[in-house]
Amino acid sequence: MFKKMLSSLGIGGPSVDTVLDTPTVRPGGLVRGNVHIKGGEVEVGIDYLALGLTTRVETESGDHEYSSNQEFFRVDLSGPFTLAAKEERSLPFEFTIPWETPVTEVYGQHLRGMSMGVRTELAVAKAVDKSDLDALAVAPLPGQLKVLEAFQQLGFEFRSADLERGYLRNVRQELPFYQEIEFYPPRHVGGINQVELTFVASPQGLDIVLEADKRGGMFTHGGDTFLHLQLSNAELDRTDIAAQIDSWIRRIASGGGHHGGGHRRHGHGGHHRGSVAGGIAGGLLGGMILGDILDG
Image (cartoon, rainbow, N blue to C red; front, side, top):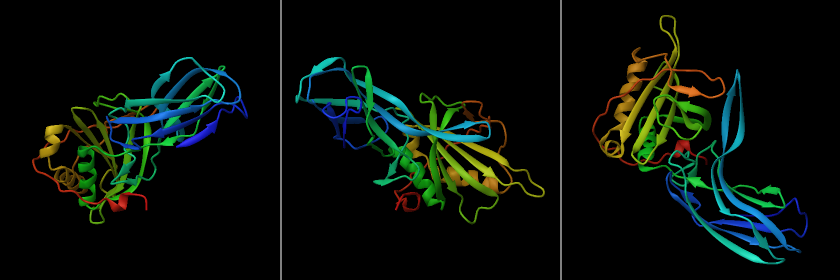
């Protein structure tokens, strides 16, 4: 929750106080709350009131990478109205966040490297005030949690998480960025520097894209190897994700797998890398605590 005086009007201007009734939500879920507006010393004309989902995105530019805040979803709550001096108004809101909204917490603990918030935008006399973010936590869908549990079960160690600007090849994607969750492989797995996990959710299921960075040796070539699982919700329930990942990792470590090509397609002159479609095996995976990938 935040309170901030409209800076363009100085002391005596209107203030806004946004309260989220649902501070935690899953992709595709509803966010509810109220925006409380209090008039200042004089009557003012409000041009509009809007809310926006904002997060931090990494962008590649040549050999460099920079990060910036990006609004990727917006809801207009009100058009023009007059706010009398000292008048108080409360505007309830409810909106559904995109299915591709990145995950920021697991089992109630913040995922390091991620940020997400609801920004309130109030415009008075052509001056726009974007107040500080009201934090919003995004928990994983059951299918996404199953994938994270599979990595935990196999002994992977969390490294970092961020959002990369760009699009994934062969994946239906609406947002202009995707989430990367990076893991160190288990100690007994040789020849792999790290594995990056990306999942893109939809009402129908989940695209799971894995990228392994394989080290080169005296007689072997390094490079990126990919696994792409495209599973419906029903397939997610009966697929042993851990077995799929384990088989793929063992194949890479033993010198197999597919390299080169291109699966991730970055914006702003990024690079192109390869794509491999994975098979599907049956089975269910029990729940586990993901202590080592979380803050604290």
